[in-house]
Image 1: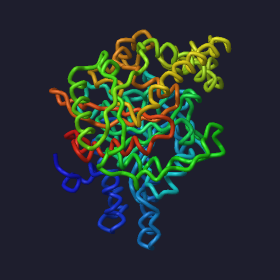
Image 2: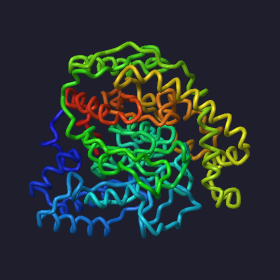
Image 3: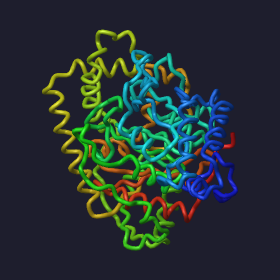
Image 4: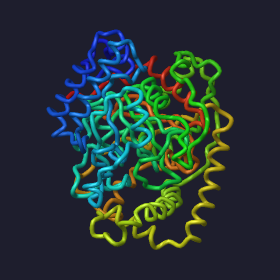
Length: 474
């Protein structure tokens, strides 16, 4: 595997490109044109972009170039082309959320995360496709992003466009959202890094809501350092978001090293291997060996025993109830505008009583308490990031809850749902490939506000293995 220096420019890391921009070796204008040309050339097949904001991107790149030449360098996102999930409001540019009912919705202001990216000097190339309403199925009026590792492979759930665009070199990083696994599943499926922050670390203001108490916004990148760069840019208190945490943003990039001395990694063999592809289990065992060689202490722990479908049955009513509240302006009055799966979820949520929601909330608290207690003795717990990528029929992904059941049965929710219920952070990192050359991924689960240690672990692992520098041949 070659180093980032010898890779095509579109596959270089965000941090590497930032250094070249800062040093004057690369022009933000030329870089943006290169990415726009690549999008024009290959995204007709990959379908990752919902809207390409070409003129806005060119204007932002020109402004960044002028500022940098004038000695006003803002930091590692300045002049770097990135993209955002089409849940994030962009003033003057449509924000559809994969929803037919919002096909023509044009916000009058930017989401806080978009504003923060712009303030950092980032060049926003456009908006990325997703499942309908950011749940599990697609609306027939919208395309399904194509996994660049194989067009018959699942591209992940709602942040699928973010995963595809980042993996295919159509941006240097992107924003995804995670309500039940939607940063981690597409990161796993597309062989990239996904950081789901602590709930409240990143403002949800101006981001279309799926379930307000579960929604997280985070970066999807090609390296852990790149994820840290984007996280530092978008995190921080926002008075416009009632769930926002008024806590200082850590300087993660300054803490990244290849030494894990003093770091405790929790391992529960039963937990990580139960129902997991054997090839992935072997890959994770190799990850554990590498971490130990880097100085980490491997600690046996016991994670709560939980069936994936039981977890989903605890999570889905909360998600559906809150989604129905969020869409009450259009559902059920415009029920025929919604697709099968999301329509079924809204129907479920609208039929629930406040008492049923409270019962689900109490179950959530029980699961979260057990989960957080298991995390406490260590700096991170190692496990799969929702299983491994699988082949899927495109038509099935347009279906309802019943027809999508065979797809959902592949989701190993025990590795994704608890961190959303508890609001704790995780990071997903590539860790190898199957015999069929499909990507494998490992996930590190951490306690609240542990993003720094999670990125530190992921970065050190990357430096020792370089799986993150292997890219799909397009």
